[in-house]
Length: 261
Ligand code: PGA
Figure 1 (cartoon, rainbow, N blue to C red):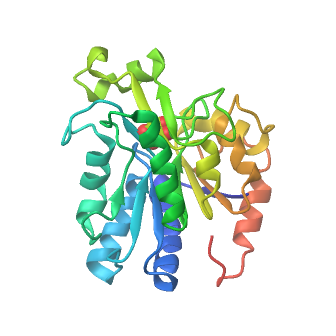
Figure 2 (cartoon, rainbow, N blue to C red):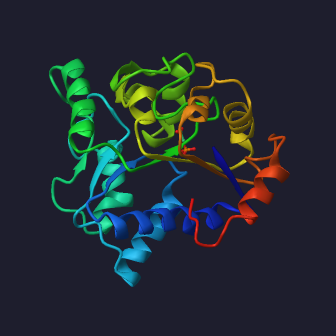
Figure 3 (cartoon, rainbow, N blue to C red):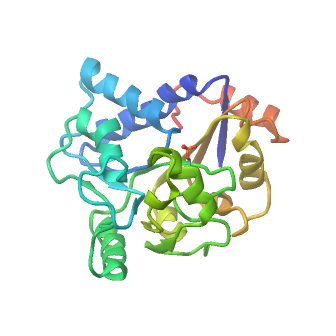
């Protein structure tokens, strides 16, 4: 696991975007794993800038979203599919139908979850999966207690999560869906490169537990310690409870220029 400590979230964006640029240059038909939340927005903005100003193209690429609410109608502004399209994929040149998400309106939700897992494999697996981390260590909707080998599945949202997300639904918790479909931790672990971002003091404990604590379902993102190619990019606030910060800074500073993340 490589840990990169940056001064501000803005400094993380070009570091992460460079990994996409390298990948898409080598493999234009790469498969990208996308996340919602505020954390990846800087990276998406930098990728959009590179598309507009430097010709970075996603025309042959595919994308798979991490998760989706169950039951929100098509086009609802809080659908994760809508969010990703608004914030990223709709602003670059993905082909129509190249961006996939779990089908939260399927009649057979369990079948839709299994189909989604299979679709990722059939596409050849995800090359780069971008991830935010929850303050409780969750990854996607894999909350504390989630099986470390779980697959894409139906999950019930806790009232805490629904309360947290009510701000996007006019502050009305009753409008927040009660269920979601989410890639499982086992599904996420099959990506070839996992890039997890964490910004702000609110993420400091989760980052410390997941990077330097034991691997445990109590802190779901800790499973990334078992990933052969995981990069964690955190700002100084999110890094503030790490113990090996000097080591991380020294190793990243000492990397050969030609070696990306
Ligand atoms: P955030 O959410 O990016 O909005 O902080 C991350 C998460 O909960 O996975």
